[in-house]
Image (cartoon, rainbow, N blue to C red; front, top):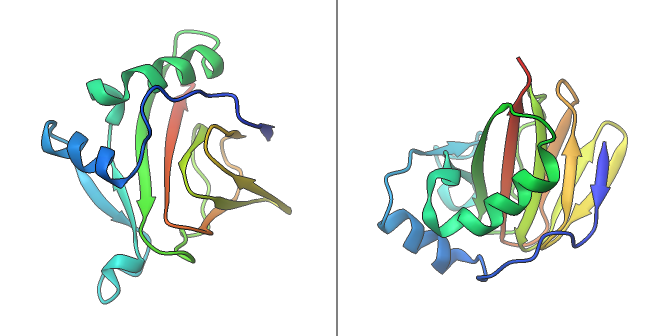
Length: 150
């Protein structure tokens, strides 16, 4: 695990209006991530797939790639957002390395036995097969860069 405070600079403020516009002008798959979606939709986490292909995210995507990807690898960039505090991901592990970038709000990440609060501009590295959970302390938006080594 690696944590870097305030390393990414944003040319545009990424907030819920920014995400809404990005969805209006691009074709993205969106899914609910977590288990609340059947009766508590606004207490769920929304995942927007492959936003790295979206022109609105190009400058921040280029910064993340430059800082986080050392060799040519397969990768994708997804956005996760939630509207109310207390929303959380399921506790899980990914089969690939992940870099988390805070864009809006604060998110508490429980990574193994450590707790890290990710805010705007912060980068958090989570190695593949590491158990973790994300808990929104505020309404939040984060970007998740998955790096596939194989």
